[in-house]
Length: 333
Image (cartoon, rainbow, N blue to C red; front, side):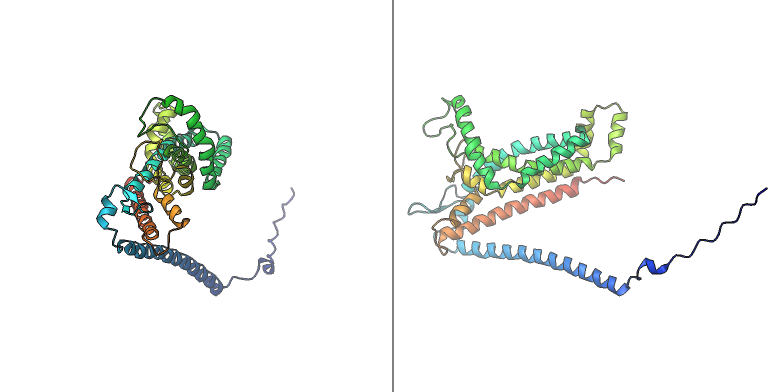
């Protein structure tokens, strides 16, 4: 019999190759620098927001100090005419109506299409297809909005004039025609909807994929089809994230500037006709800041009152989104 030699003790490791021991004070210093940098960034963002609010509030108060401006007319008036004629009117509702009309058209297109695309990417597409389609869709978010504006002018509006106008022949009257002109709310709304489509699709898809796999497996075990699982289980479970994506996209559409400035027109009026020329709040501000209105005149100051109104609208939508997140958020173990 041969004896098995006992294994020799492992040689001691060369501690010199492990590097120098880390200094506790140096690590604490780095952590303090990181925390200080984050605090400065957060403070800077708060200061910027506060400054914006103060500027809007100050200039808006200055607007209401003009003798031909009244708070009652601003909030209840139905005519917005600050530039033409001897008698000026400052009723905000025509601008609000134009903004809401374009936003409603954009949301009607982007929200259902984006949600359907998100469901497909999350529940039906293979990993290879998802890895190809999602980045391609998100490329739309990086296109400058002025490009969407020219797309509306050169592609969408001519299509509406050539294909839709013949179908609308005979409708409307001479005073209120239905035919699409060079500027219209539908063209601007569709272009805005294409712009916000990646926001809806990407955020909704992330919310759908965050639903635990166990919920899907349980629904499949009960005999549900893929469509049933997607619509009746996954979508309700991700409802808070989907609604948050919708509200974020709507806020983005309300604040859009270049598309509506190029494609919607410059007539402030209260109408629900998508073929009509409208003016939004952001388009009016562009018109004032690029025009010949004096910086001390009531026309220039009115843009700050419009901006304050737009700020309040987007703030309300953001608060609704936060409430929806808290109210319908579901947590899974």
